[in-house]
Image 1 (tube, rainbow, N blue to C red):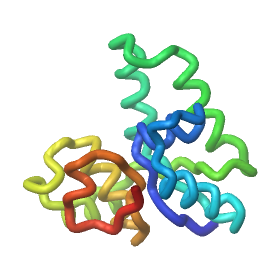
Image 2: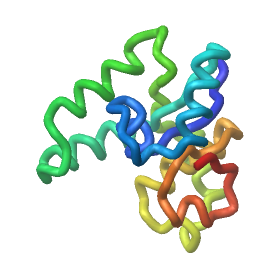
Image 3: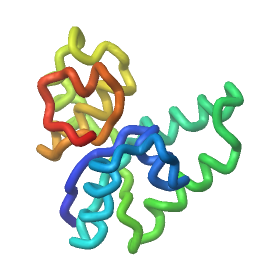
Image 4: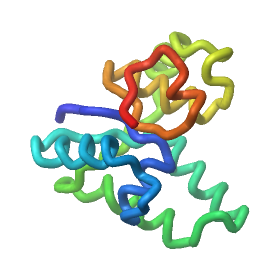
Length: 134
């Protein structure tokens, strides 16, 4: 399995729900990966973040099911990237001064680990010295 990029939580949700906030470049990158039979990784932290956002009534309860079902389907472009000690090591390459939010650093560290771009609208991630798609 070849990982083409790492989507942050909002990117993954916006792709799944055809939300217009997803940039044209991000949508094209995800679709190109799917066509090439490559995967877009979603960090385990994104699943936890969705639970948190549902509890805060910022997302509908169905968001969790949608986000967990996509990587469970071997034909879907999304795959889950478990947060491992190796990713923690890669996360150390993401300066806290550039990406101070812990879940964002975990997503960025996952991209560093796989040596692929982060797909994110987050301004701090986009301003960091990382490979990016937006």
